[in-house]
Length: 327
Image (cartoon, helix red, strand yellow):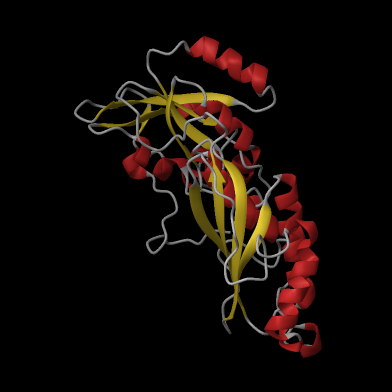
């Protein structure tokens, strides 16, 4: 569904105005938003104090960049929250509350926005968090939503960051990679239970989620004086990556390395870890989700091992530089 309806102004936001739209948003969210002052209704939402560290992340969805008219509006609302949840998963955190800021053209369909919020609310309920507020602004030529998500680690758990890997550590990924343009970019599950489990394993040094393509997202994990050495034959290719390759002639591996929006987890495992025992524990806890060792970090002054991928020849998605847009 197109978000816009220039032919029927009575069915667009121009017929509502801001105050009536906010009242409608409260209805659409239902019990996914609490009463003020913990939710919509005051200048700020009030969040109870917590003895645990807090984490905050923010990500948008923009029409024409992160979604188009082929993506159902409910899925757009869910994607907005899920891509932020993926950030929390990469640190082993769990969600607590979220705020949503919208920029909307007046010609935006009321029905489209209702379904967007109902999809957002359903995702919030599934992950047991509240939408506690936000903002609305008019932008005649841009439809975008930005979500700020607050989270915290489970009681007694550590937060993982991108730092901590050492030369020789093993590189792992969850799931399969590539082919996001075929619909994977909005049909995905944020790896929250997996991230929390990985953060509790002492052998796991650091972690990130794969949003811009693993060729780019692995770089911040590399320790000083080392670089990723990936085994081309070990990269877990998705069926979507193979289909995309059949359509455009690019290699499936290139799709897996650079497409982005996989929303899987990549992490470093200590080189002296018992990898077989680690794999058995993973399979017992997550029997349906593949876990793959795809390489290791090697000193930069050494040549890459035979058959390793030269990541300088691959580049994931990068805003302000990329020559192609995200879905």
